[in-house]
Image (cartoon, rainbow, N blue to C red; front, side, top):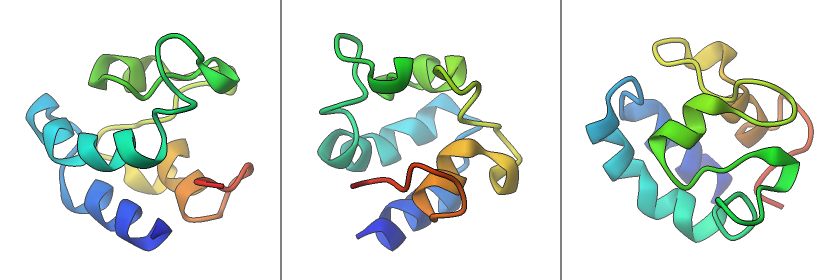
Length: 86
């Protein structure tokens, strides 16, 4: 499942808010239960595109146009800790 999430994020350009609509159902299913506006695990909410751009306790998670260095992608692919989704 992790591969499917990463594939969806990489194949849709997150540089545009419209693309978030394509990825949002996957994030909501696997990520937003912990990373939402109320719970903010790691001080991170993935509930909206704006929230993703703000980042969390460990800094910015999304670098539009630079998925290789985006923390979100690195965590989902297992290149950074914690590995998500758990």
